Length: 271
Image (cartoon, rainbow, N blue to C red; front, side, top):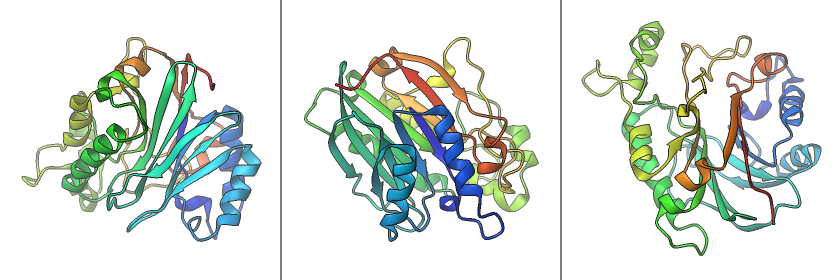
């Protein structure tokens, strides 16, 4: 499983080869399931999305953004998708959910990109994600008993780390995005709420180092200061099946986007 914010759909008037580099990064990892964010222009240009999916050998399931940019989940054959439907709420960007048949039972995957500007809106969107995961597919067991993976650019800092230095390094106009209304306290409510709902941060397991996901060394990102904003969050049954997790750095990943992609392996297969 892989998640990747590809920055404005890979479109760049000064660097037309960037989409090719994005696809190179993805092809090197060869994920079975891929969550993409910031798919600018792809909601109206289906041929371009189909071309991207075809080059990767995957099938795309797109969810349009309400105010921002679409997101998508791409699935590699022979994965069988039983449900593919956006979470029906006014997300700033969007949220797509698919339910896949695996040898371990139904797997719900959500790709999302939460509001970049407001912690209060991110917290509301997190609640919509939890509700959308609970309503996905025929499985009506409590969410913490099901196989669910939430991945994407959550634009949120985690409640388990110290963030004072990275907030101080931000330019003043961007600090408010990660502070409570008092202007001082770091806003970690979104990740804390998802944790309470039953999602486990796969990078908090023993032996795994928490790495920054933005910015890349050559991809820009003035609104970042060395931060982890991208996540792989799994319910406990799926977390028990998780193997190695990694942030993909180096080589082409340094210039393809302003975000590094995240990858995790799981002990399951398509049915």
